[in-house]
Image (tube, each protein chain N blue to C red):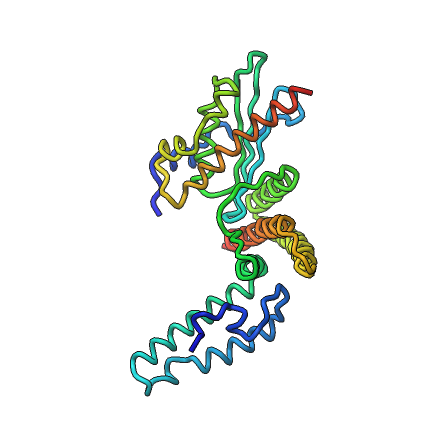
Length: 127
Length: 177
């Protein structure tokens, strides 16, 4: 199956690979996985006092589309508020990367990951 | 001939059950493939031969499912309860996923170092984890009333471990090249 140029670009030059300290109170961590393909995705956001995402990092073990989807999301969320970040839809990711139908679930995983990261941040900042 | 309606277990003369004697399964496959072999139906015309070929394909499909613990568990849930667990869905179990991520990282580093000994140790570790997980799954299937949610979790955990085992095979090829 042929990957789109954008997928290949993100796959070969992934943006924002890495980790933040997950116990840091300004950090939200989203961990998701898809059993059918065995992909595991960790997406983290670093949020400032105004609720704006200053930085984002990811680590994904999976196919090119999963890596590209998470890489793209880390780029998109920077500068957004956590509430804005939560509205990112998998269809937008799939469209931007021109994912074929069999790879749509990779974009779903990335959407679930950013939602989980925001939820984790909110849960912990309330404490 | 009701063979098309027979499920994979019935095809091998088995009750739907998670516990399948693998030696017995292989023996039965050999016998069934032998009697279904298209050459044995050479005199029966093209229709007979086609049926024999379809039967052979179905036997091989069934064997592949019954042999593999994850596929067998999923098929069993499908046949007995009509529940499909093969569709993609997101797992939200941070602790387990973090462990899986760390295992993949470990494998990634071993592959980068081309360390064959470390890879063998790592393979042993994952195989052991898969064995434990398979036993856990078996215990759940032994219960009279199946706990579907617990079964789903046990199945996906085993799925992730099998994915890592698959990646280990790929890593072996890379290191040995």
